[in-house]
Image (tube, rainbow, N blue to C red; front, top):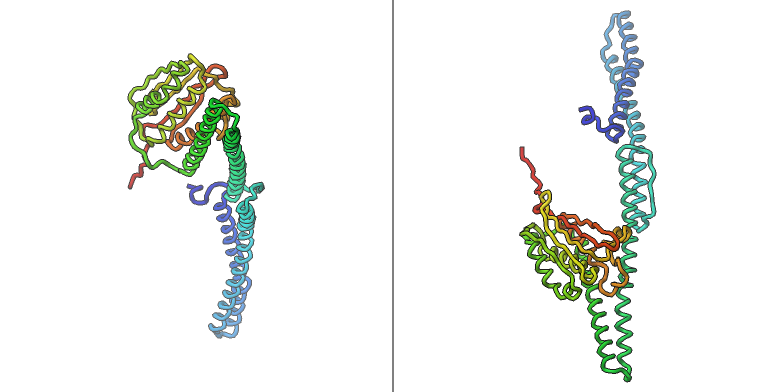
Length: 370
């Protein structure tokens, strides 16, 4: 009750209430003092004079009271102006400083930090401002890295296409060499198209705050379909895929969820050696669907595990030509938008287990009307 009226301890609200309470008490004291000095004594003296001469000059007494009240009001107003000006400076001073710092942020200068020992709302605002500046600085660094990485990723296939196209101009090439070079150009063109497509997908997903195209999706059937589509890849490496996929329906975006399973399963096949094994299963845990995609492939170190969802990051450089390093970034973004979570259990040389948890249905916000 006390905090509700006065506000939290050391808050701006409580400080203002305390300051204005002090102002009010001071004004009362000053008013009483002024009244006693200028009014009370004058009236007492006048009454004594009236008793002595036995005359009642009421008009003069009224004038004295009016004059005294006017002096009291003017004095009180001056004190209020002085104290309010001091309070305004105390409040608006830090706000002006934060405003100037905000202008610097607007110009792109994120290397700025405010200092404050205050524990009220101004102190909280200062702390939040510093957090915002740091986050914006991180975003700027990420954008620069993204542009640098993207430039590098696009430059490599373009250089290959140009190089082999120039080789095809030679008249001394055999038919086999021409066929080989044309095949490389087609592969690099597909890779370039894949990079561009994934960059566009990731850009669209980054600009989304929530999924609007949700409906009931049978993810068990989606995973079976992906396994069948990728059959040529896992049979070529003689990989055994074990699938335990009970019928599971969740509320989500069908197209985006399909991309998740395609990326994760294709990734497992890519990093699992010949005669390897991949186990795919779905379980219900705490009102969530838990999808596990476990392989006995090359696995990851702890450092690789931390970076795996970064854009353009690839675990094994020997597989560089097989992907763009954007697939898992897209997967994580889709799962986040689906109110889900993705975890990795991995050990170098012993394989990886990608665990996806998705809610069956997001709890609706309920408002009780009283």
